[in-house]
Image 1: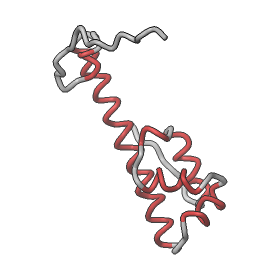
Image 2 (image 1 turned 45 degrees about the vertical axis):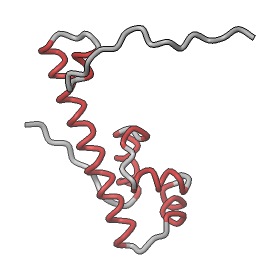
Image 3 (image 1 turned 180 degrees about the vertical axis):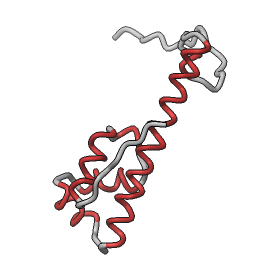
Length: 107
């Protein structure tokens, strides 16, 4: 069996902006970073709203999963704020299934 070469040949120092590290120009990298941070903040807002709904209604994760039409581990991921596992539209859909609406505001 042939040995796989796993030697590290180059590393790039992190700048605090992954988009700049990937080679985007400074202005575009900053815009992308801000958009990413806003997306994550919006996901956390909706995840917290769902966690509050679960708590307020004294639901077990399995009960919440049944109401929302997802698996119990999916609810666990949401409650534990695993933002990378959810799209914004999926979270908006969950909120709507609880009888609430989401309003978008542009400033």
